[in-house]
Image 1 (cartoon, protein in one colour):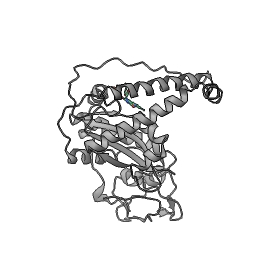
Image 2 (cartoon, protein in one colour; image 1 turned 90 degrees about the vertical axis):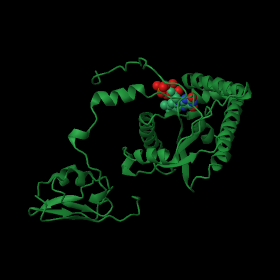
Image 3 (cartoon, helix red, strand yellow; image 1 turned 45 degrees about the vertical axis):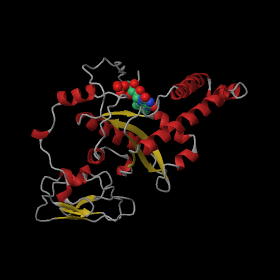
Image 4 (tube, protein in one colour; image 1 turned 180 degrees about the vertical axis):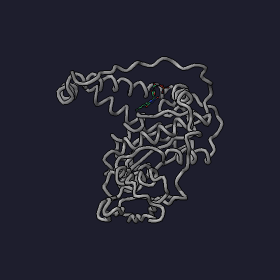
Length: 299
Ligand SMILES: Cc1cc2nc3c(=O)[nH]c(=O)nc-3n(C[C@H](O)[C@H](O)[C@H](O)COP(=O)(O)O)c2cc1C
């Protein structure tokens, strides 16, 4: 188990017998931890190491020792065992957001495997701050689905209230107001679907994963989205289907009581939710997606 946080003291040393003094560690380190002086690599202990490990990864001589990143825990790979680009693109194209699940349960070990895979993503300041709450009890998933519908329906009633409407329009501006009112319609539609016996939030998925971070992590949401996309791609490769559920996060962000019911560790906030399960249907082709515009330069 690797634990890295701001309180962890780092200790780096260089094996002088192995070090060639090539200076690669000096160049790749973002924090100026390494310096060449008198043809020796010096470690600046007063600088803050973010434990990104670029120094270790780029040292072809294996000369750098880091107490937080032991060499025997560093994954090894070579050019030969990298997937081909076409294989990766096929994976990207064939992953879809799934909402029809079979009744087959998802093994706990698979969920743990996916979370282990979620670690290999960039994170702001290498904080690696994302942890996961897993809901895999039907009663709990049903409960949060019902509550999400209630919270969002409550929001839609406020947004549709003729007394508030003009104020909301002024505060949000014309464009954002239109978008918000569109959401309000979809929130009340969720309520109708729920009353008709559907689960319009989690689609009766057997598992819901909630990525959370300490609330003071500046880019906690971005970190969580990266981690969850690794999960979604790897899940697809394992024959599982997934879907990001923004509605749940909107409800949690708008209702402190509901958020508290997740019983996340103190100071943590939910950042992303994904549902997971075995897909009921196979997909036989991809579909075209919008071609992004490319603007070269600012002229
Ligand atoms: C930020 C974000 C929030 C989303 N929230 C929901 C949601 O609340 N409910 C839902 O059914 N799908 C949700 N989705 C899934 C999108 O609807 C889906 O990605 C989109 O339709 C494209 O389909 P694809 O992923 O199969 O290509 C969300 C996706 C993203 C990226």
